[in-house]
Image (cartoon, rainbow, N blue to C red; front, side, top):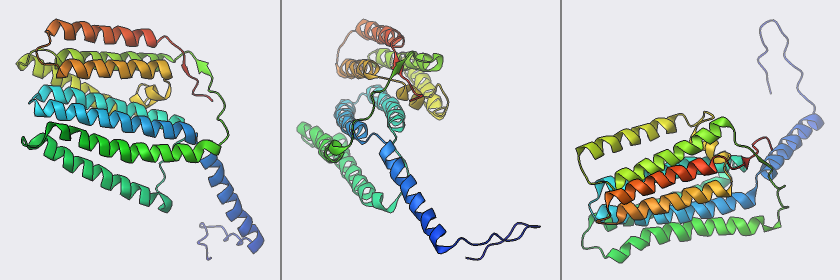
Length: 286
């Protein structure tokens, strides 16, 4: 292979066939070590959790749109976006690699077709009044079976992997603790606004909260970003988020619920996240 030398320097001598072969073998070894550094078992469980979460959100979104609750589905949508950012941090913590290799194209194409099918059915569910109410389960089942099944297959493949060393716990950093509290504030405020009577003031405040969440998403690469916060979470923080979002969805979908109930629930969500922010998180130095 001809080289273009740097001005003022001679071209480097090409390596011998043996040295070039060793270079190739070392490159393959590095790629193998990178693959092994990922906790495939944890990533498979995260895939299953994402499938369950997405299926639940699709059902909640369909119910909200069919009931003509504009503010309701916005609340549910942005709670889902928060989870997506948190989950990306968890995936990166467990060694997920975002490389687009040829071997991944079939899975990516199959996933894209699955999502497209679910969205088409979802469109019929929410925009066709004649579509049966039970049809709300169809897009959720497509996602749950497709992506959840893929996660289950990945979990079975990882069954032979050696157990990853137990992650050590450490007090959460100041940025992670503040980010955890902000997640609670965002979910709590969305709960209060989603269950409040419709009006101009409610809509304006909801818009402001949504814009703040979007701005927070733009800062995803900072220590205060949602991916960094999600990477520092352990199971108590994840359980707090799951419980809070479930309570939020039930409240905003419940017709005729008193506004005071939403206020109390939103305040309770904020206090819950303040409490779990003082619990130990993952030691990200591992």
